[in-house]
Image (cartoon, rainbow, N blue to C red; front, side):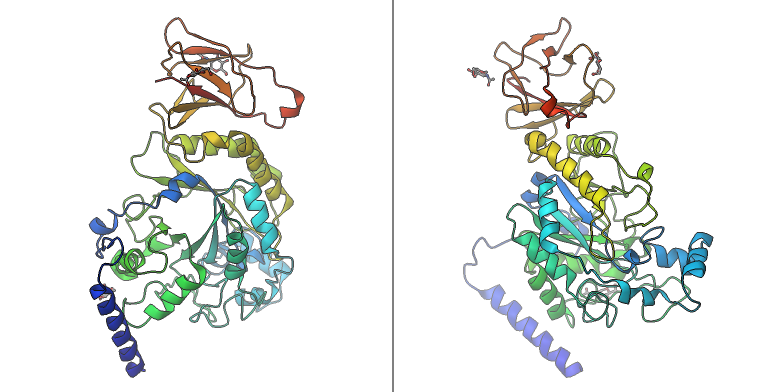
Length: 464
Ligand SMILES: *[C@@H]1O[C@H](CO)[C@@H](O)[C@H](O)[C@H]1NC(C)=O
Ligand SMILES: *[C@@H]1O[C@H](CO)[C@@H](O)[C@H](O)[C@H]1NC(C)=O
Ligand SMILES: *[C@@H]1O[C@H](CO)[C@@H](O)[C@H](O)[C@H]1NC(C)=O
């Protein structure tokens, strides 16, 4: 075996030498070194900030019990939470193991093209799929997850590859991959203690033995984001995070396009990496000075599918749109999660929410995609939120004023200021307010626009 590795190392060195001495490599790109100062200096690829809205998918063996949350195994076997223990005792024979759920992960109705069509109709510009959650099960044929992956058992399909192919048929939407670095239980054994290990394609010592394996993964799936998670248990030296990122940025097949998040070590979150997720469902109260993303879930109780959802626990479309508006106004991206079922179905309630967001974006997307934060983020008790693009300023208001006249305080007008409402063709009448700002006469909205009842966009041109 060591002879094989030596050969591979030799090959790697040969390749590196060839690249180093290749004359006049186009645009001789900067090389990053495996330390945070260097890695943090890499600019995010421009596509990421422009995209603004993505769909997050938590899918795995936890989608089979579909009870509680995607942490089912941990809650049941490690924490022994009584609701989980009772659920298993009532519904499964004694001795039933978590691994026994895997054959029932059938994905019989998984139609990657209709999923991709739905995400596009939702207005999402990227999709982030779990390749492996904390349970360790991989949705592709990982060479180091023997018999605990979606090709050897369950659906017998490369779910990552199949969804990636369908998403890539659409030019407007990018394919991104989530991966947890921990395994809460390494199958096929059940350990009663929390156990994690570095392995697979990410964090073995680099660049020696596993590089070809890592490289193959990236060549095959070409993820536009590596959305890392589960990092909090150990420092970057344990995960070899900086070595991995240096390889990703310098030499990987996605080095020019890939974006990453910030979950690369205990203490990394909100401090290192590409865009910052900080905590799940992070909601800043002022404009952050670093590109960030809010990940949140339509089912407020879980990221994975739960059969025991109640409608009161599901975000409604107006709250999703309002959340999206606030995040974008604060310069963030919005990554909205849904959990597909074990059968490969996206529950109609999630489809309806996604299509509702898409409907809103089809009218108001001009104020969202590729926008930048304005000098003011919000006013009037957060009922008005601003974004900007080139010379235009967008005021997105979340409550329709009873007197049909919208008062904006922050814009500085001039006689050539023009005011329109997205989705409405005629210019709107306005006048400067006596103190500061402006008053805008809102149009009468015909019933055909009634589905959009929760956030409207005023476009201002010629304001400062
Ligand atoms: C990975 O981390 C270990 C422990 O910190 C270190 O000894 C090793 O050199 C690292 N691998 C690479 C390729 O830097
Ligand atoms: C604040 O917004 C509410 C709801 O749109 C509106 O009725 C009110 O007039 C606004 N107040 C000011 C000071 O603009
Ligand atoms: C406002 O509209 C008028 C008429 O179309 C146009 O001449 C003017 O340049 C516009 N002002 C701004 C700031 O775009």
